[in-house]
Every structure is written in structure tokens, then in C-alpha cells.
Image 1 (cartoon, rainbow, N blue to C red):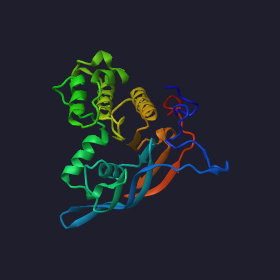
Image 2: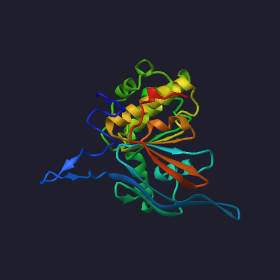
Image 3: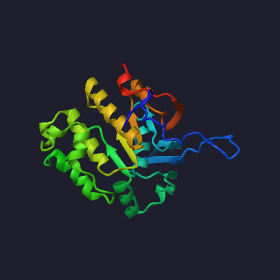
Image 4: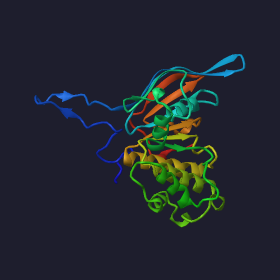
Length: 266
């Protein structure tokens, strides 16, 4: 796969269709495919007699193949929004529509299948099983999904860990463990990849390596990647940035010329 000047695979831009013309040779605005929609989403938590609102009437549209950032300080609501989208928590009210289905209406069985087959998760602290090798950690997830099975060794080679296939997490660095978690998430062949502070525990150089890997793979395979972060310096790599504060989206920024990770400086 060759990459153009803006970091996208050649002949592909943002997951949007190429320019189209009708029979009269007049330009027709391409229709973007919105695969995720939040509609007036509210999330409240009860602490004793007090009700705390973590999200207040959130609305957004996310499109196929986009790299999206949820940006904000701790407690802004960005991780709550990610958890609702991933089916790890339930909205108090509103709709979350994924590929035409409102996941807020899912029963436990449907939600389990959704998490198992449609969503890949990458967490800050890896969450690898310490008693399993890198290969076994990846294979375990692949066996649980009903999607086409992936080759664990090939995935680990893709993330640069062919020399760590039989190593255990305790024998790997933080960056290597995070790469295993990326391979594990990709083993499900997910449509959507959710990453909650995926580089929060990593140093500067390893952060760049992990981000570069994530973005390149998602661009190549047209996977929608949503990253929760407080790091303003990675904003230029994203197609869209939603800034959260006090449970609300205070701004939305669309970047028509995202940078490659290698072009970032901070």
C-alpha cells in the first residue's frame, strides 16, 4: 500500500467516495457514509442522593475510515462517550446509532455480540493476560469472534513483534505490550477501533511508534479509529477532533489535510 502526501492510501481520502458526475456531466456532491451517530446522548450517575451528569446532550456524526480524537482534560466526558460507544456502559437517554442500529436498545445478548464482533478495544494499560504468550493473547480474541479468523503470527509480524511471538508480557517493554494489544484488537477484524489513552503510559519515542502503527493500519484497512486523549500535540493527525469539557462537546474541528505521525513535533 502506497501513501500519498497527506498520509492516506493513494486513491483514498478520508473514507469518502471519489468525486462523481451525473449523466449530464454535472458534479454531484459525494455522499459520505455516517456509521456512528450520537443523538442527544445523556449519561448520569447516582452517588447516594446526588445525580452527577457525565454527558449532557451529546450529538455527533462519525464517518467510515476516519481518524477521530475525543480531546479533553480528565473528567471532561471523553472516556464516558467512548465507553458508551463500545457498549461498556449504557446511556441514560438518547440514541447511539452504529451502522443503522441503535445500540442503546440492545439486550445483553445483542450487546455482547456487538462488542465481540464489531468493536476493537485498546486500553492505556494493555490488559494482556500475563500467563499467556503474545501469540496466545492474540489468538484468544480471534477465537472468540465470529468474524473470519486472523493469523496471530502474521498480526504480530505486522506490528513488528515477530521476535516476541512466544514471549510473555512480563518479558516485553511497555511499547511492545501495547503493540500486542493492537494486534489483539485487530484480530477481530473490527469495523471500529476504540483507543482510550493508548499512549498515556509510554515515552515520547514509543508514543510516536505506536501512533504511527495505529494510524497506518486504520488508513490502510479503512477502519474507523477513535482515540481518547488529552494530548493536544497529536491533533494534526486526525480527520476530526471533538473537544470535551464538563460533559459537553464545546467544539468540533475538521482537518482536511491531516499530517503523518512522522511529521509531528512536540
